[in-house]
Image (cartoon, rainbow, N blue to C red):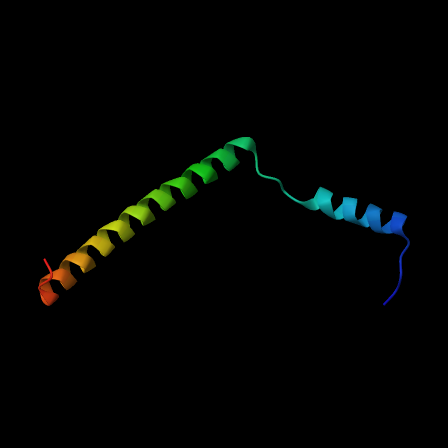
Length: 64
């Protein structure tokens, strides 16, 4: 493997970082909002599913 000096390495890192397309503030806020919404929907789904399973098992086992 070819060795490069630290200065050249840092120049290459900076060059690659400049190629990255960073999201805008608006895109970041929209994505964050969608993630929080999906967390809420998922937690409600699993709460409902857990409640139905618990109710069903109690009904089957007669442990009301």
